[in-house]
Length: 594
Image (cartoon, rainbow, N blue to C red; front, side):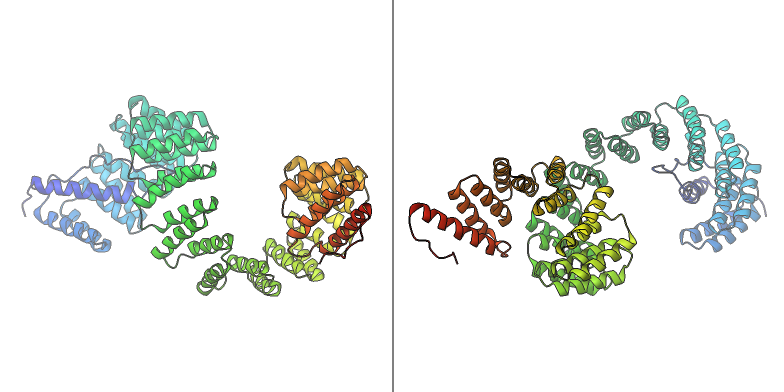
C-alpha cells in the first residue's frame, strides 16, 4: 500500500481532537493546589504522513473515546499507530488514554516514544512530565518541564506546571523561584501573580499576598480565584471593609458569579450589618430563586434580626423547593420556637424525627418545648432518648439535668449532671447547673465548690461570681467577700439588673441601707418584671423610712409575680406596713390583702 498525506482538513480535526483530549486527560486531571487553574493548551504535534487506513482507525478511536469506551479507543489507536508509527501525536494520545485506563507504565512508555519521535514537541514533554508526576517521580517530571521551558522560554505552561508541582509538595521557595522566572519574562501574566499570592498565603506573608493578588485582579478582572483569595486574606488580616470592597469589585467584574455575593453577605452578617447582608442575599434570591440554600441563608439573616415571620417565610420557600431539606425544616422549627408558636414548632420537629428518627437536635428542641410548657417528664424522656443516641455529648446531660431540676427531682438531676461531668470535667455549664441544684438542696458547701470550679475554668463567668456572692448575701455571711464577688460580676456585665440587685441586697445585709436603696432602684429600672427585686426594694425603702414607697414596691412585686415566688412573704410585709400606716394615723387596721 502506498503512503498518502493526511488531508489538511483531517489533520486539523486530528489536532483539535488530540488537543482536547490532552487538556482533559493531562492538565485538567492533575491535582491542583487551592485556587490553581489548568494551564492553557499548548501546540500539539500532529501526523503529517499517514495512510488513509491509519486515519480511519484514529477516527474510530476518537468516536469510542467520546462515548467513554476507552478500551475500544485504545485498541483502535494501536491499529492507527501500527500503520503510522512515526507520528508523535498518536503516541501522546495513547499515553493519555492508557493513563485513564490505569496503565501507568505503558502510558509512560508511550509518552517516551512520543518524545523520542518529536524531541522538540512541547506536548510530548508535558504529557510525560504529567505522567511522571502522577507516579510521584518528581525529579523526572521536573526534568521534562525544564526541557519545555528551554524549548519555549516565553510559553507559560511549563512554568505553571512546575510551580504547581512544587506547590503540591509544599516546596514553596522552589515554586516561588519558578514563578519569578516566569513573570520576569511575562510581567503581565495574571496567573503568575495569582499563584505567587497563593504561595504567600501558605507562608503567611500577608502583605505580599495582598499585593500579588491585587495585581492579578488588575491584570485580569476575570480571575475569580484571585478575588476569592484576596477577600480571604483581607478578612484574615481583620480588614473587613477592604474585604467587602474586594467582593464588590469582584461582583462588578463577574456579575454572573454568585459566590462573591454570598461571601459579601456572609461577611456583612459577621460584622453585624444585618440589613446590608440581607440586601446582598436578596440579590441572590433574584438571581437563583430555585436554590434552597439562598432562601435558608436569607432566613438565617432575618432570624438574627428577630423578624420571625419573614424568616419563617424564607425557610418555607426553601422547603417548597426541597421538601426533604431537614436543615431548612429545623431552622423553621427554631423560628417558631422563638416566635412562641409552640404547636407549629412541635409539628416541624416531629416531621424531622419521622424523616430522621435519630435526630438528636430535634429531640433537644422538643425537650425545650416540653420544659417550657412545664411538661417536665415528657422533656426528660425525650432528652434521655437523645443521650441514648449520642451518649458522649456532655451538653445533653446538661439539658436533661436542667429539665429534672425544673421538675424538682433534685437527686436525679445531680446524678445526670455528674454523669455528664464524667465525660468532661471542665464543662463549666455542667458545674454551674450542679451548683444551682446543690443550692436548692441546701447543700451549701457543695454549691460553693461547684461555683468556684466554674470560676477556675472560666474566670470571666459573670453568673458564677454573682451566684456565689448572692448566696453569701442571702445568708448574711462573708458579706465583704459577697460584695467583692458581685462587683467582679458587674465588671463583666455592668448593666445586668440581677447583678445590681445582688449588690444592693449585699449592702442591705451589711446595714448600708442608703447604698442598698440606690442599687436596688437601679436594679428595678433594668429588670421591671422580677418580683424578688421589687421585694428587696420594698425592704430597702422601709429601712430608709419611706413606707409609702415600700408599699408601692411590694404591690408591684405582687403584680409581676406570675409564679407566686414571693407572694406569701410580700403579702405579710404589706399587711404589716399598712397596719403601721393606720396606727400612725390612728385608724383601725384592715385585713391582709387577698
